[in-house]
Length: 262
Picture 1 (cartoon, rainbow, N blue to C red):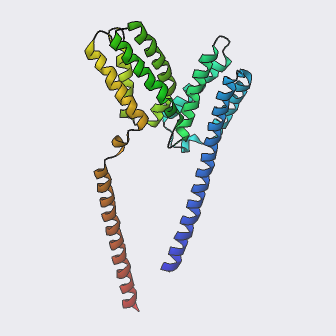
Picture 2: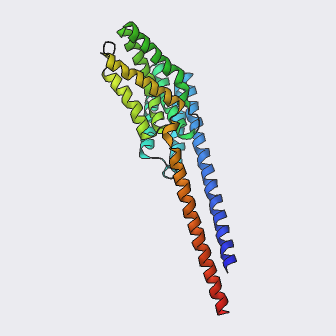
C-alpha cells in the first residue's frame, strides 16, 4: 500500500513539475517576443519610419495583453512603469511636433523598461555607464573652474539621460537602493543654482557619482549577508532532519503495529 502511494505521489509530482516548466518556458518565450518587438520599434524610430513603428507598437499592445501577467510575478509598480513608458513612446511616435531626438529618447526608455523585465544578468541600461559617468567628470571640471553655465549644461544632459534609464533601474534595484540613487539626483537638482559656490552641496555631487559607479558595478554587497544565508541554510537543514526523523519514527511505529496484529 505504501509503495503504491509513493508511486502515485511521484507520478503526480512529475506531471505537475513538467506542466509548470512548460508554462514557464511559454511565458519566457512570450516575454522574449515582447523584448524583440520593443527593440524593433526603436530601430524603426531611429530610421525615421514612424508609421511602421506605430503599427508595431499596436502589435506590442496585443502581445502584452495576451500574456497572463497576473501570473508573471509582476508588481503594480512594474505594470505602471510598462504602461507609462508605453504611452510616452506611443505619444512620441505619433506626435506631429516631436523632434527625432525626442522620439528616440521616449522609445529608448520604453525599450529599456521591457529589457529590464526580461534580462537577468546585464540589462541594456547598464550600457549607458560611459555616457552617464562622463557627465559627472564634466560637472566636476566645471565646478573646479567655477563655470556655472558649463555645469548647468552638463547637468541638464545628465538629467535627460537619467530620465531615460530611471524606470528601468527602478525595476532592477531594490526599493532602498533606488531611493538612495533618486534622492541624490533630486537633491542636486534642487540646489543646482548654488552648487558651484557651496562646497558642502558640492560634496553631495561627489557622493552621487560614487553611488552611480556602484550602481553600474552592482550593489551585490547589499543583496544578502553571507551570515544570513548560513543561518537560513542551517535552520532549514535542521528542520528537514527533524521532519525526516519524525516521519521515520511514524513509519516504524505503523510497521510494528502491523506486525503485532499479524
